Image 1 (cartoon, rainbow, N blue to C red):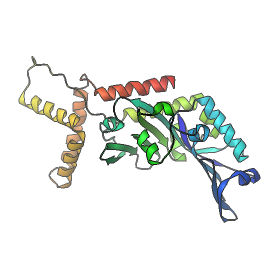
Image 2: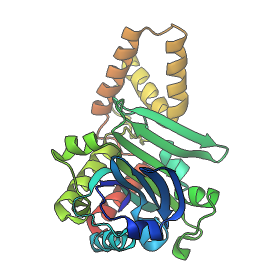
Image 3: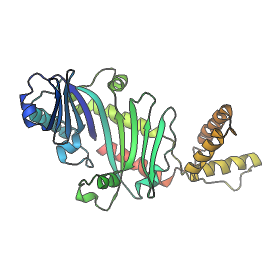
Image 4: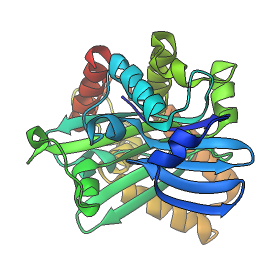
Length: 306
């Protein structure tokens, strides 16, 4: 499940690297760049920077997740091909990604992902629906993304395993994109060899699940008790919650429009958000969206059994 990584390493003897590196470009005596297969290489006065998809480097594609032994093998392969020992290489960024086979198209699941507190939500949509959603925090150290993996592979004219042909693949990725983010989560730097450390891997899995669960999900089904007394106020609440879950985008756009036009003040906007959170707690016994329930189960199964 570990995929894209970025490493910083001190390199003394670079003869093997220079000999095997493709597409070499030298800017000055201290700076050059190139690649070994899909792994980008950059050398400057601060050291050697290696970045790219470890899964694609090892297996030619990143739809199929790497096991921890395969991560270890991939790091060993990279050491041999670069002629560089990576045991002390500092991890500057790391990504944990999973590819989920879904019943419906990925857009049907992604459209139910709401706004996460203290994170910015970026959405890319086409005529085919929501293709990509990315959440990032203000300082840019952490990201969580979901996208249609088959659509992404086709756009880049890449190959993917034949067993996935004709299937719907939703890709979900948790990324720590800055060194300070890694230190914040692990209370220390991570070295390249930590990437196949079971304790570190379990921590990354936990962080992935925390990020996924922190995203509000829409599309819930409501089972209403016809024998219960429903007041006009309660009826308004039921309608509002039904609308918010059935049409989350329309609800969000309407709220944004009313706020930007000045019809809803900042104070009123905060009260509306507080009311939404209160309703989330009140309606917890109500069923989840069938699509989200499916996705939750498949993510949990992937995390448990790899």
